Image (cartoon, rainbow, N blue to C red):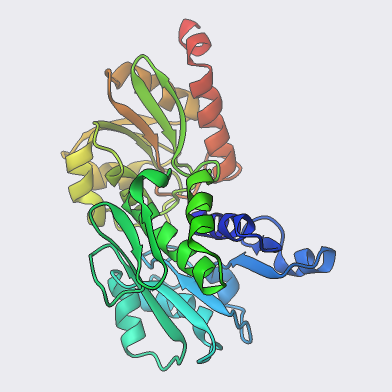
Length: 333
């Protein structure tokens, strides 16, 4: 979602008549029925790709593949990877494929793929064979210039990958470097995605309710250098929590498990961090206030779906924001 929003923002900043649809906002069918655009930026989920047979983007972007929605794919990661790669099944040598080459699942699948698309790998390592990569101070776009870190408001390495992917798409379409850099600098991320809410008693509160899988939560936790009070839990989607054990040990001092059934997440991290079970957002926020010390970070990054306690991830994020914004009033009750 961040990459979709950023790509749209960069193209708009570069002067394109651009629209956005798909798994964000309106369906593409409804959007094109209502308005004409020079370029469409679409977020396409695996669920949507499962039913795509002739979909042929001019530029396809695949940022990451990690275990998610495995309950839909018979707990078979290979089926999920195949679903994601339906993105490029109809693309040809005139089309462009931007992808995160550091991701092992993407690289392994691409190594046996017969796609003839023009490939544009991006990497977090300084690799001049990549179309874009990170060095110590900048994002380097091999053919198009660079963007200084100080001009990128997004936080975390994963957002550098998002920025490289969005930037490559804009450059391929003909956007000029100064406009792309200006667009990156002025971008504001979507609500519920690493959204800074406020500081309270020296503690910073972040809303990452949109992190509904383990990988997204891993990226969020890795973004902080301060001790984290982590609020997580909900409906498990076949999560493998072992892949974030190291980052949890390194970053988290308290886990507030929030859900109707916290058994799996409690079992996964028992003995690793202090765990506190809660059954509502209000209870979770109150517990975070009692646990957090000055210079700590409270992070809502559930790694799970929301439907046990909330209507959707937006409702979960909105409740978090509301309680945090009204902490003075809440703590006086």
